[in-house]
Amino acid sequence: MDWTALTLSLQLAAWTVAILLPVSVFMGRFLAYRRFRGKGLVEALVMLPLVLPPTVFGFYLLVAFGRNTPVGDLWQSLFGQPLVFSFEGLVVASVIVNLPFAIQPAQRGFEAVAADVREAAKCCGMAPMASLWLVELPLAWPGVMTAMVLTFAHTLGEFGVVLMVGGSIPGETKTIAIAIYDRVQGFDDRGAAIMSGVLVAISLFTIALTQWMSARMGRRLS
Amino acid sequence: MTTIIHRRSLLGALAAVGFARPVMAQNGVPVVAAASSMQFAMAEIAEAFAAETGQSIRFSFGSSGNFARQIREGAPFEVFIAADEDIIPGLHRDGLVADPGTVYAIGRLVIVAPHGSDLVPDGSFDTLAALLNAGKITRFAIANPEHAPYGMRAREALQARGLWEALQPFLVQGENVTQAAQFALSGNAEGGITAYSLVLSADIARLGTYALIPEAAHAPLRQRMVRLPGATPAANTFYDYMQSHAARKILERYGFAVPAAG
Image (cartoon, rainbow over all chains, first blue to last red; front, side, top):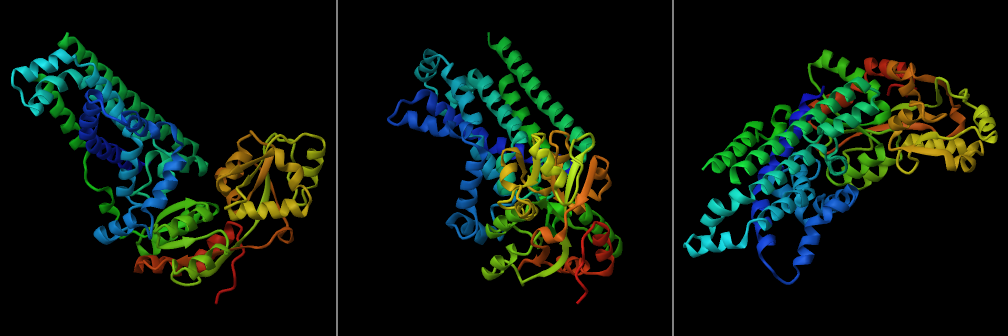
């Protein structure tokens, strides 16, 4: 069992969720309530990582963030190390590929908040942030929660992009999914089986936890 | 207010996972990119190296072609242990590696077949040709000849015997030579071509039988290693250790021919 790889995957998932939580709430709310020109295009862009193969993202990230690119050079001069093949690079990649998982369910959650409830909050003189925090979020919470759990679980399972921009460096970019791949290639079936089992258990637990939480939430709200 | 508490508990749970940047514990341990054909031999060499010097090494195993690409994009490897030598001059010309490097081993190809396969491995490919003619080959595994050195040499050997075209519909390609061995010996193929160094490891030896392919059948698999400009003293020590008597003994045990010390 490669605990370093498992811890690394959990940390990657935690960072991804932490960064995407505000994105999920504000983008989800924005897309749910606003009508504007090009909204269809924005929604399509958000959904893009869902249908594109990870190799496409891996390739773009290599080309956009690699050595001798403006972004790559800027990062190198700021932090003294390259963005690709580093943990930070994985976080950037992970945030991008998880956008649809973070935004879509939250958007559905905010869409489910009845317009007259929001109107009432406004009429009562609630500031937009207060309305978001005290009225909309409690109602849209199951959507946001689902978004975060999907993001977390999906990050644990991410493979293709990590393989292309990670470089499989132990303790830095070798996630649990990559470690399993390496074990299979190393003919270590037992190691691969144990790690796969652990990953299945964690994923199942995470999903069961959300379902339980949103069921409780639904009961209290009704 | 309960919902707000829930929100906080989620954030608390996230914080509990720990946001510490994970590399700190392993800073200073050099990262060595090594061809996947080397993985069993390298594990043993690293163990001997640790016993002698007390220093550890982090390995990333994969195909040499992919590593070359990753080094071009700035991968933070300190030593690159390739499975051939044609990849290195280009990297050296572009200033991506510190020096022209050195040939540390010469690899060999083997044809393998899993237990129970119709294929009885022989280095001249006679049984492979006969099975192919009889329509009894459904899958045959090699490493990707586009970027994996052992795949390129396997293609040369099959071309030299005139079997390359006939095998096309049945070829399955591993991303690197270890995956080719995996495919060849999984029982889903009649066999395949992989690295001698791999079939000499106990984990793989028990899965099937093999025969050496004559060196004359393909260009030599001269394997070169090289340091990158960012190599730390620990990486340099390891680079030197790879050429030591102890490391050469281990390489020989994994079926590599080792160039004369010099």
